[in-house]
Image (cartoon, rainbow, N blue to C red):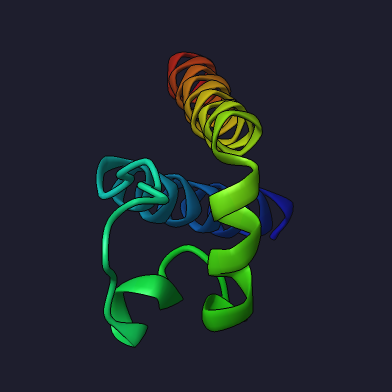
Length: 91
């Protein structure tokens, strides 16, 4: 029973890692000088129209923040894959 519970949790973590990988692979840095449609802006922020103003004033800082998000996401994926590999070796 406990083994099945752990395996279910592990499968959930694998799915989440896949979703994170897909999200990171689609990442494109925000270009404050580009003209985005409302749908394109949704990827960057739920408050897309208001957010564009902030992007115009803070492009360098936002570029660093986006890069930190990508780096952190990549690190999370790496750690999850390492956990999955270790778990598979111990079975």
